[in-house]
Length: 222
Image (tube, rainbow, N blue to C red; front, side):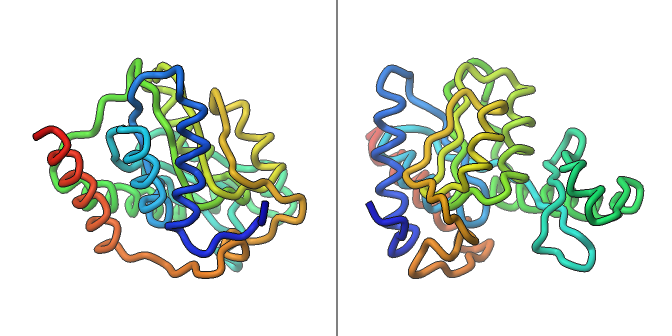
């Protein structure tokens, strides 16, 4: 198959098929999108598996002079996770990055509170939980999210993404019970390279996706 997707809608449909197959012997899952880009894909997956949709927020910690190069990630709570080898390569210490950690943790809190809108966090303990993103590159934010969720003792923890870097998949296998990828091209580049249309999402668009999912879920219960 092609390693390219037209957009997140097409990628979400492809991933939904793969996740549905993986979960055929599991209970109805909790599907958690990684904002921002993972949320519309998670919505499609949640609809396919009749799961509950919510978010898990993890923020990348970048090299100060090259923010796109992630050396770690942080969630709302728990310690930041770092690639110690990469830290050594770029000559940074944990102490030097402490202001970045606190800034990104504060942003994770802000996004979580805004996206939930006062609703309580979903129950994780004992449940099948699927963490969804629009792509897996270094795996830093996915790893932080999975580590945070693991502490809540889910029954079965899955990471799922339409396109994944093979080396990141290998790394995540120690964090998740399963990693589901539609494509893992050996020549993986930036996530956006594998989409023909890959616009950045706003907070408002994330909120709209979550609200639409809640309306659809309520309609199904009528």
